Image (cartoon, rainbow, N blue to C red; front, side, top):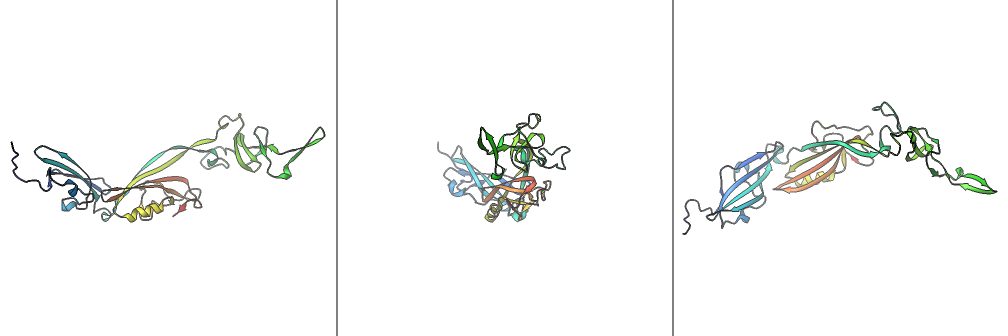
Length: 293
């Protein structure tokens, strides 16, 4: 029995009721829109990435992806996802950054501890290694750097030049190669079991990850240029990437505390999806190593 066609022939895509628009609260809007079409309809010509949403009020939403299901009676259902930036947010140019924080502990070399050489204001005991070191046979022998310090020893009438000397011990069994400190060898005195053999400690670490969408290629290029730079505010140039609750400023070591450590980009509809990471340092990122802006 032949198919009898009544109503719209569906030679053009017919928008179906019930389509939705979802706002993420930061300026990104997405829409899932359903069309009915005849199976002879050229889906590839209609569903071109970047095409505008069919409703004029949402023309700023651009096609990102689509799927089609082939139904009975020569009818196909075309489902299209559109994305765009709400024109009420930053004039529709870019979304507000959406940033989250991760806080935990990470391992660091014990010599970087703020209470290692000098008593830090945040600690009631210490310092760990101190600043005064005396020679001891607890540690290994170390090479003599100054020829004037070479030792002469006579055995059976033969003069022997001793080219090694005892290392130096500080507080808690800390061992160094020189009376002024120099290379840290380790903790060598078992009388201090809390330190003996230890080389690392756990310190706090804070990082931020976020996402921002933009219609402007220049935003992508600007953020890539700012990678590996540290700021004492919540912003890198015109981009306010940190939330109001994030600590900002200059660290105890003199560098800005927040470093833009990663920028990743992908296309999303007609937008650029920019994913970034920021690393926080209480001491700050030294301006002789990292660009401070």
